[in-house]
Length: 160
Ligand code: ADP
Image (cartoon, rainbow, N blue to C red; front, top):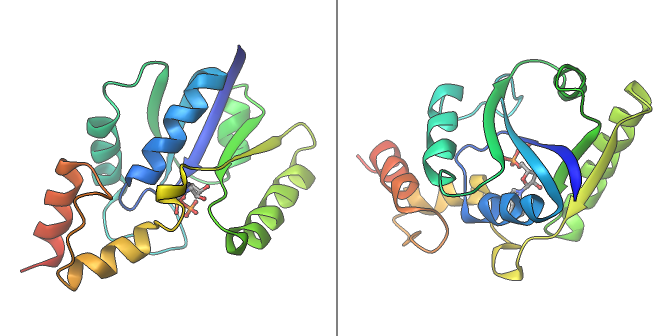
């Protein structure tokens, strides 16, 4: 069983795809820190505190994880945790270019950092927080894509 890994992201909001990834990661690593980026360039809809709270709620039954927020560079966060493994998800080929660029940049910034890619269950391979928000605002049934508590938050925020 490997040691510690960090799964960083914006989680705006957490989806069943993220949860699938977290579960997979906990089968490989004895501890997984799910790290919520405070200063994401994506202009999140939910505050970092809200994203953190939703993630904690939806993952409370998963053993071996911690959910934390972080500011700044993920490699700095990893250093603080004395960890050198980052986990990222690859859904489609379209994720690949951006993810490769980021993994290589992080490696250039810190040679000891390794990024591991996991593939979600194919049922979630098309799912993104961005699409989810769009679908919710158009009135789609999103119940199979997110936990109940997140569905409620999304509807409250987007369907007035
Ligand atoms: P970021 O802004 O850092 O990309 P996201 O919350 O969009 O944050 O994604 C965090 C991580 O979760 C990324 O590695 C992304 O590829 C992965 N991810 C997002 N949605 C899914 C999904 N449906 N299945 C698997 N991995 C996913």
